[in-house]
Image 1: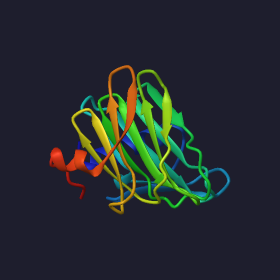
Image 2 (image 1 turned 180 degrees about the horizontal axis):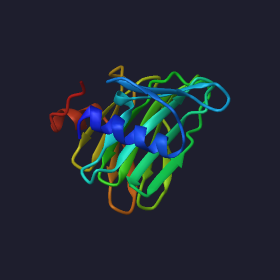
Image 3 (image 1 turned 120 degrees about the horizontal axis):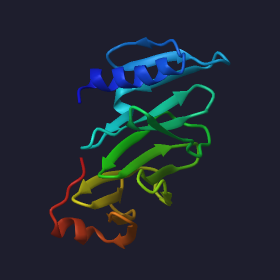
Image 4 (image 1 turned 60 degrees about the vertical axis):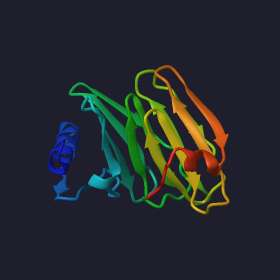
Length: 178
């Protein structure tokens, strides 16, 4: 799905809720009923192999929301816990799992949302900045500085398992973070 198609689908969802938007190649912007500016940037979206679309909706007064469009008739809304957001969210899909990473005032946060079971689990991170790599069904997390924590999360259809690993695990598997 192209960036234009992604933004057009989101714009259609907003139109169905009587929201008048302004759209560019990179984002959709509008004012809500309270005159707060809202936006969706194309870099804060994710699409899985089945065409399920997710996006982070920024709100200038901190009323952020994540939307997951399962199909034309089903839209899930999730309100992430936020303490002064920095509008730096990243969304990733692995099959039925939506991985949501963002920073708030105090720390970086990571949630794994199972769109089939609607279970959402926060992975507690002690780092201020964490790098992410998805390899197969493993979500690998590494603190930005090499002496920080290394976490492996294995995603199964019905559950996730978290494990602390060391840097050797990444080196043995030839995994690098960009």
